[in-house]
Length: 271
Image (cartoon, rainbow, N blue to C red):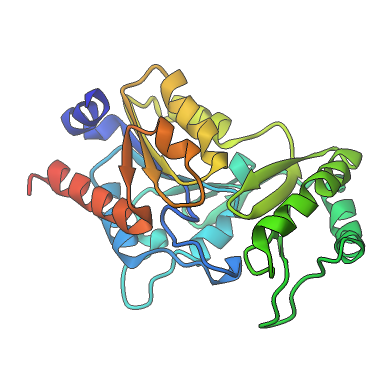
């Protein structure tokens, strides 16, 4: 309640932070098919004009989040006033149509080259078209292996954990687990660090962060470590329970997030 009260009393210093997949966009079998929920985009367009900043903190490349935030015939993420997207867990930044980022570490290229043979050796080759199988998502600075489309998603995830951890370690990377996905990425940055740096940059007076997955736990901790009045929101699913246990507010998936953002925009605009 203290966090919500602070946002309402001084919206100009409030930061609204959100994850993308599972929070603003529903989880889908193929990550390339993910798209922002139109109601969420419309609510963020309203909020962007009312609060100090709206920031999306995602493991996706920043430009991909913007592209998948397009809403045909309606406002999309690119229309949110002053929006900043911190992609690749904060290693990339999209702002005013421009993306800035350091060069990717060489370990990512090595993992990208070795991964197909490893998956084949494990009996988990990538699916072809509509055929079931794991899905490899190349994020540029990271490579993610999704098991949602495998014949046995949970079994495939168990099979992959140790081999992918060994592959990542061999090339100076770490493994970030998620909802039926294991992502191999550089160490040294997470959503919590990215969010804390952004709050300091903006001189924030309050913060709300919403997420759905294990990678968002660091951002929840950052809200509490910031010393600011804050609110943590869980976009709930049956696949991840840890986040809901730590959240101040639990809503029903991206649809619930959109409703919460719209209600907050109504409150701040005096409706």
